[in-house]
Length: 344
Figure 1 (cartoon, rainbow, N blue to C red):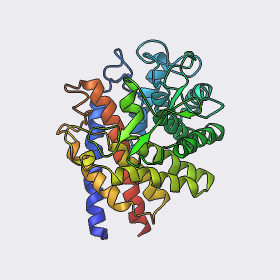
Figure 2: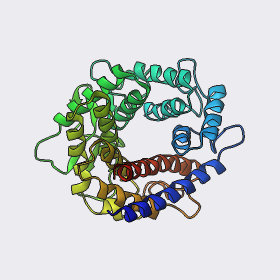
Figure 3: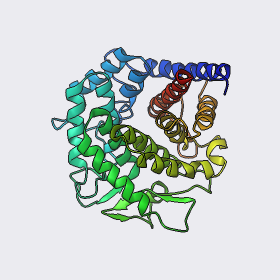
Figure 4: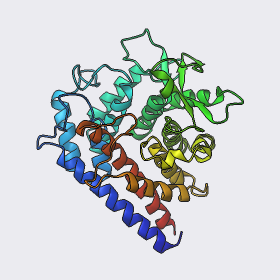
């Protein structure tokens, strides 16, 4: 890309991000309570998104509101709408820990990280899909483990990050030979889950040759791995991240072209973090393309919505979840493009 093309791309992505931010701000009360908070927790990532987009005051309001009524004494989410069923609960708590850190609520952030440390399996490093009190489940997933690993890198919790990295490395090593377009992202104890059943099947196995799959798992892993590589000054995490993102690169075109699916969003995030950590890796074209993908999927009012094949009539809580996520991801793309521009 020429400098002029890069500048134009940066401008377009910035407009998209700012439209998303305005939608978020319009759906947060003066006391910091996000829309739908009395029904369920769709707000875990909101402070993170606002903080990276330059809205620190609004992010701080949400954190303060959460501190006053939504957090348990152990640093996790309190029983009720904030905690919900506790299923996949490590994932939004890691979002909240990052948001609290970025708004300089370090005590709140570290308390959340302590809660996440207690959830983490000390033997494998994985984060469970069920609440920590439910030891009947020993199933751990990549999305939660990589997200917690990223939060640990950001907050300086090296012990948690190291364990999460070991879990991801082991998961990649366990992938079956001869299933090049299939990626398995769950483990039961130390073993790979290769025959997921019921509702877990779609989450635990992604077939990149087919449309409407859970295309986001390699991207989440790549974000953690690229961050971990910078923290530990190692090249192997970058090689693993490249290997994982190749699933998306080689996968079906419907990942990017299906108007009913936004499951590939984290590929853009992963490519953006890799462009920063591995500038010679050929990531710029993917980052630019994903910037346009986000713009193309954004609603006129600035919001983003979940995949329509999963949520036909999304409400404001659903839009809050997705808009906060996409604002953060679009900001990562903006940051990566800015890094390229600065490097000349």
